[in-house]
Length: 78
Image 1 (cartoon, one colour):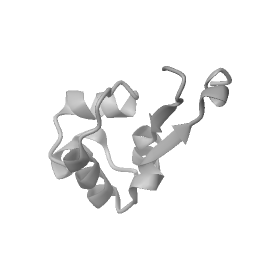
Image 2 (image 1 turned 180 degrees about the horizontal axis):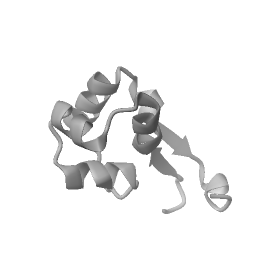
Image 3 (image 1 turned 60 degrees about the vertical axis):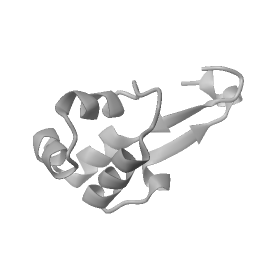
Image 4 (image 1 turned 135 degrees about the horizontal axis):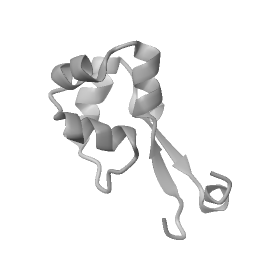
């Protein structure tokens, strides 16, 4: 994680709140299911701004709803 903190992707929670299935969401956001699962599990190492834009469009949310910065001192508590 490094000394700078990390970014947490909150897509899994946003999907639950939206009540969209992963299949329906992946079709609307034009994402492959494996890519969607990687975003949901926070296993993405490089964020794609086009993918973020599609996610925000489908979920009608902002990037700040989707991403959360976690400072290094709080990582130990996760």
